Image (cartoon, rainbow, N blue to C red):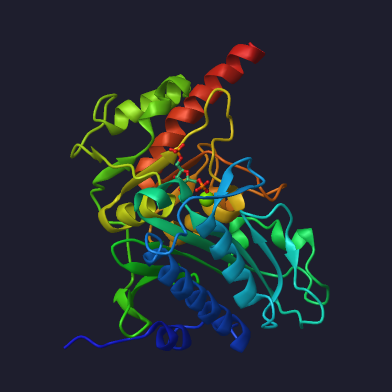
Length: 340
Ligand code: AHM
Ligand code: MG
């Protein structure tokens, strides 16, 4: 008989050496926020929550009610616990210091409260993404330097997928583990132990509608994924949900690559470095994969702006390396043409 392990038990048993109660309890807080958001998203069609809230976020996009709700819940669960010195959310223009009179803690939480919001109205999977850093200076209240840290400095990261079931998948740098919410018990139970990207990869995920906006090297890479341009091995199939968490989760289970490339008029693509790309890069690296902007590891990119975007290639290592190969060849040819 397989053993039943709750997320609380697992977090406690596998907490990193440096973890005191603060870090462990922060993970519990995130699991609690995930349960609250899952409860609300599952009832979305029943409670007049669908539709746009009318507000426009910093990215110039209309927020929907569940985005606002999820953002608020995460903030309110985490602001007064004494574990954080700052938070930053994709839905808020500025980062947030822990308000007085609450005690400040040693960690920073960055999060995308509800990613894939265009899928809410059509009952398609959506997700929450989070990353945890240590504060740069433990003696001070949160500053921008605490938030703008490269992915390499993450101490934990994960996502929650609100799909046919709710799953929380996270890493603290010792592999990746997934937990499924039992709605009757209200508990996340260990269901996917030590997740690794399988080989050979099955899928590539990209929005083909942007093909004409990509550079020739990006177009070549896509043709390579489709089996031309010298690709050997099993042909890959295409899957694209348009919810980053759902696309990454499927590829984590079945192998593959997710791409959101640079476009001619959008050189940084769409995906946010701090709230989306870096946490998922850490997680995928811990599952044996790799994430790149086409030229460098996402983990090494130093954010200079809270809402900075980056092109993203993420998934099985060999597939992401091939994207870098095509893009870097193009870069060196165009570089030698301008200098020659
Ligand atoms: P969001 O943070 O506003 O929800 O946007 C991010 C989402 C990702 O989940 C998804 O991968 C991407 O946008 C889809 O974009 P597109 O519709 O351009 O393919
Ligand atoms: Mg998002």
